[in-house]
Amino acid sequence: MIEIKDLHKKFGKNEVLKGIDLSIKEGGIFSILGPNGSGKTTLIKAILGMVLPDSGEIFINEKSLKNNFKYREKIDYLPQIANFPGNLKVNELIDMIKDLRASEATKDEELIELFKLQPFLNKRLVNLSGGTKQKVNLVLTFMFDSPLIILDEPTSGLDPISHLRLKNLIFAEKEKGKTILVTSHILSFVEEIADEIVFLLEGKIYFKGSIPELKSKTEQPDFEHAIASILSASYA
Amino acid sequence: MLKILKYSFYDLMRSRWSYVYFLFYLLLGVVLLFLNNDLSKAVITLMNVIIILVPLIGTIFGVMYYYNSREFTELLLAQPVKRSSIFLGQYFGVATSLALSLVIGLGMPFVFYGIFNSNAIWDFSLLLITGAFLTFIFTALAFVIALSNENKIKGFGYAILLWLFMAVIYDGLFLMSLLYFEDYPLDKFSLVATMLNPVDLSRVLILLKLDISALLGYTGAVFQQFFGTNFGLILSFVMLVFWVVIPTFFIWRIAKRKDF
Image (cartoon, rainbow over all chains, first blue to last red; front, side, top):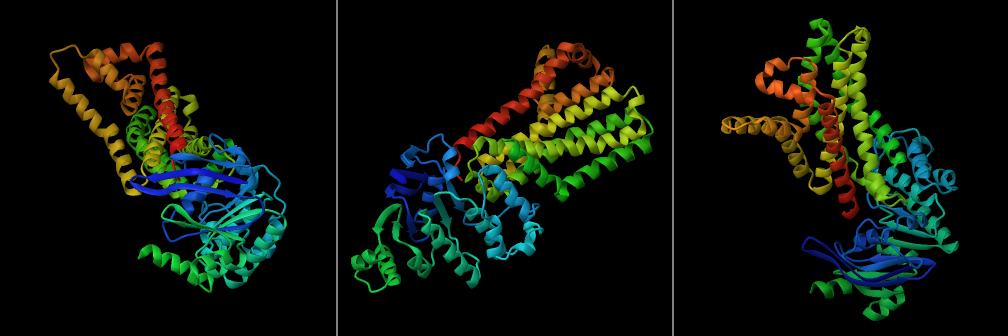
């Protein structure tokens, strides 16, 4: 599904990605982990074509991303910070994204029902709380039926019930055979949903595999300690 | 691109600032007309206001809009939309809504005053056309500045400096060079120097249309000879179009290579 070959990216003097080689097969939930500033968001943005790599190439379904924007029809992306044009109302924003993508959005009503957004549909986005904005953000992401879903910190600002609903939603999408990329700092969430994790450290892939593999590699009994041991080893 | 333009335009049409801007021109038009009671004089006063204010508002609004909609731009960038259409759409959305505020805000009082039955109609339309051009030019320049500066404060600073340079400093340098080189023939130089600054170009265009070029002395005569002809008029408009097209090209180019 996604093939990344020797990806490098610098921002000024700051070398964020130092040669990433990654291949992600179709189907399943992949979690990208790493400390702050390890390049998670940069990697995701490179896949989305928002960050242009200095060298290396990315292929999605065997097509290179260079000078290509149509491939994004096949990706649903949830950005990290939900901030929308304040003067629009929620339902106008939903209609607008539908209009821009020109692909059939079938699940919007279902999702609005799921996250109980009906009372907010006619409100302007400036007047919504952070958590409600995140729910709108989730509706915008999940209302399409694309084979690849990319979620950047999907749980931020959500209350426990919405958190649970989000988890079920992610599992339901996985059942349909979709590929889902998630970044999150909430390890319990990652442990619960991820089939495989990709651990980034200082711009390189430190580990790629399943959680049990990580545990045996670091010789730690649980996931949290395994991650902590990688981090303390690298900071020491 | 048209879709992005449409949404940026709607977004702005609902923002308070568009109304403030619109009401300001409406008020200005009404006050000038009913206190002055003379169309031509009102047009001259308006010109002085427009020449300075329109570039300022265009610059500030352009920079502000770009920085304020950054997260939204990121959302759009993840959609299957071409990069160039996102930024050009936003630019045209901002510039069009500003230009509309200007044209409608000023146009309404003048229409009610009876501009259609007056000789000043051509002067007045020229005023609105150059005002609209200035809006498009300075909004485009503001977008170029904002796109090339991640830092908001820097972006604002450069934008204000650009406005200050075009609206004030350029004239000062121009005058000083005229004084310094007064022993040389300066007709061509001053013509070219005027053409190179959209603010000056608009001012000269309107002044000459108002038939007060005699006030400008010998230079006025030279200018009248040049800008008064159809050739001069067309060339001036071509220059104004260039001033829109070139920054727009830069918006396109910078947007294509930028990381978000």
